[in-house]
Amino acid sequence: MLKKKKRVTKELFQTVIKSGSTLSGHFFIFRFLKQKSPQYAFVVSKKIAKRAVVRNKLRRQGYNALKSFPLKDYAGIFFFKKQTESTTFNEIKDDIESILNKLR
Image (cartoon, rainbow, N blue to C red; front, side, top):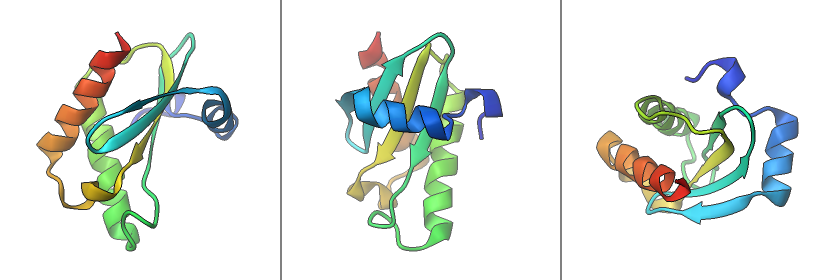
């Protein structure tokens, strides 16, 4: 899990959804806005994984993968796509890396 300062707040979440730009990867849809400090979030819908245990596991894997990259000054939300339920940690990490490289 990221530090509280580096997580997207409720107000910022709505702003990113309404006026943010979008990038797509194999396992994620990434919505983002440029800002002064980095803040990120991961969202797993019930359509993706019915059980909360699986949803929480996917979110934890996303946050752990994100920790290994230098965070740029964006407010970003990673939305998991349907095929992510059966992916490995390394696949998630590679997809996050490719999305973050598109930002630069």
